[in-house]
Image 1 (cartoon, rainbow, N blue to C red):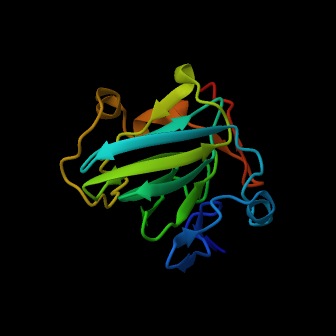
Image 2 (cartoon, rainbow, N blue to C red):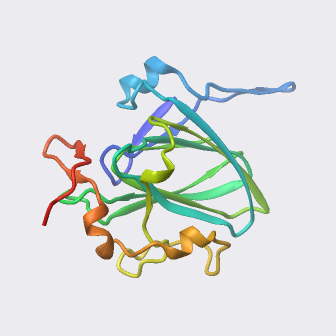
Length: 195
C-alpha cells in the first residue's frame, strides 16, 4: 500500500495492494494502523454512499464548525475528485488538487478537515463511498461555487448536473467570513473573524 503526498499538504492519495487471481480480487479498504502511520486520522465516525449519473457534479462542500476529513473511493465507475484548500491564511489557500478515482484503479483520496471537497462523474455512472471524521451537520454545511473563475478548477465536464444547493453557492472570495482559519501548525480553527 502506498501513501502519496499530493501538491496540497495533508491531501493524500492511497494506492492499495490488490491481490488478484482467477477467483477475483482482494484488497484492504482501510487499515487503522497503516493509515494512522501515514498521517490519516484513526477516527472515522460516518460512512456515506452515493450513486450518480454521468455528468453529475457534487460540491464543493465543507462544514465550518464540525469540519469533516473524508476518505473517498469510487467503487463503481470513475470520478474526478477535487480537494480545495479554503483555510484563510494557509500558504496554499485557494489551491486545488484533482485526481481520477475509479473502480478499476481502486485508489483513494484523503481530504483533511479545512478543505472543501467535490467530484464529478466521468463514467456512465458511479458509486462513491467515503468515510468521514465527523458527523454530517445540516445546519453547518457550506459550499464554494463549483465553477468559481478565480479557482480555475479543470473539471472534465462543461455542463454538469447540479443540485439547486450546489448552483447557489458563492465564490471563494465572497465566502471569506464563512471559512476556517489556518494555524501555523497546519491545523485549522473553526473560529470566525469578527471583522
